[in-house]
Length: 240
Image 1 (cartoon, one colour):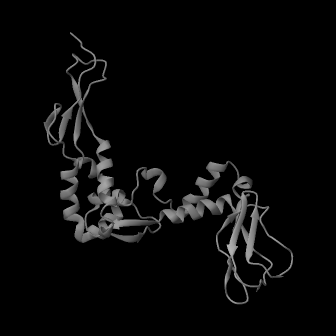
Image 2: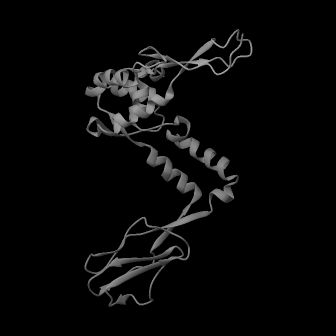
Image 3: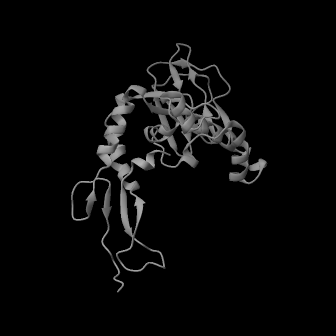
């Protein structure tokens, strides 16, 4: 990934057993400079477009498609806010089943109900009584048994407490189903689909981004300064 070429180095005291002295150093990439970069990205949200990762896409294929250069894959990863590519990049459809089976240990477990999600319910005057996709458990119920109620509050009850929804007048609810079960397998599919939606840097901003990246990650002069891309650490153990 070309990103690591852009990161500055730290000359770190060698941990190798065959080092000759305390002034033997190894060069490592300073990944902590990412913090300054993420601050820069969060301050410039207008640079981005929304992008849907298709099944089989990789950072390098997305970069090739958008920027004409697969080595700009690090721009895709950084602007998407991804810090762990193995866990945050969406799995392919055929991988979801194996991932879920491995995570939960058996088909029986992965097909158990994790929680329920509410359906949207509206009254006879098309007012929303219950919002969609409200996560509830098996004890969830609507307060009261009659379909027609005259109250100023609509109360949803579950084990975590009551949720009260505003309602000014009497309303009629005509439905039997208020929530649907979501299995662990379906949950993992939904979470994977969420990861497909990322922010991506607009192609016209790529040259400026690369230039700014190099400026942001350069070191300022200090006691450990060697160059804009290299600093050293202080030796901690002296070897004669």
